[in-house]
Image 1 (cartoon, one colour):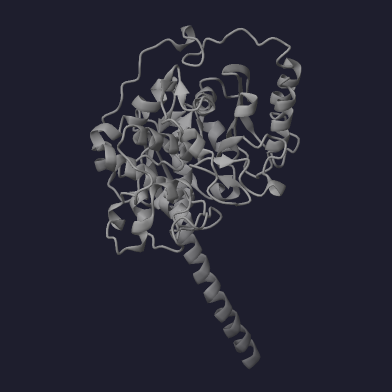
Image 2 (image 1 turned 45 degrees about the vertical axis):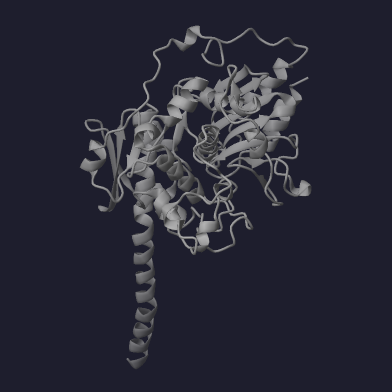
Length: 461
């Protein structure tokens, strides 16, 4: 009897901590799961206009998402998510603004906010020549492009060779010498489907920073104009905007999506993402250590807002960038505080992502207008230090790191690129006059981008 009691007591001592750990894990993780699902489903259905069933079956197909219950309300354009009735989260769609996940701010207050949006030009883009419109030019002569090879390279990445771990390529667009030479879409997607860029949004935030510099409203070499760091005695006062652009702020911020971290807290629980990150302490001397952080990008977005003021900020990306490039589908979504989520939340068609790449291929000039400051693209593609993967101003570089471990050995060293979660890419290769866009839902990091680049490059004579 005493032995049985001892065993039961031991099991209880083991079971109670396990239960407490499980409760703690659920307390941290469930709101992130429901927040992520509500946000993704809301943006896909209400902003991108995708079929709800398709989104549930593909975008929310993981085991963790299967724990949650998501309800779409078409009457007020919202999505609510919960797990066993707990961790309820809600996202709301507002026309022209996309979807915002409610966090820390009352829903009525968010819905009542006034935004000075830029009016979208009323144009029939089918009658306007590419790239400002969608009227495509005649095909390139065969002495410049092997069209059969190019079509093979593009369509090959849509084939599912592993049904258990699908790559789910959704859209590919290839530009050569500024012209659209290849384009393909998966079933259920087309030329007008908006797709998430995730961290490719960081590269767009960099472009907006460049425009602000061109306008003389920001000196990126000075201490970053962040209210929390204005005291010269604060060690964070030494952080410059360049440090933020190059992911060398030194802030103590953990970018990890496999568990609860600063990044998941910021994206799925905070009302003001830039302010949340600005409140982090300093871990390393600014400018000395590379650490990829979505928080840095949202601080930059907040800086742009403070420099412009809300009356200008709301329409700034559209007026000064998107509409000048013909990116009429693009939407960059705000957090509950009203700042654009410059790290992650932009949607656009594959063609519009390609137009963004073309701006950088052309050294910041578009339709004979200089959009980015002279020299900005050169600075963007100059590595700050020697890492295994080179990094510039919110763009990844195929050079600048250790040549022995260049991330894409089949591509030229001058290639730079925007890179987003689930293998979203805008590859820019100046030496080959190429912009290559790939959008998809690769949830297992098994998309062979190097082979894709190798095959496309082989088609260019």
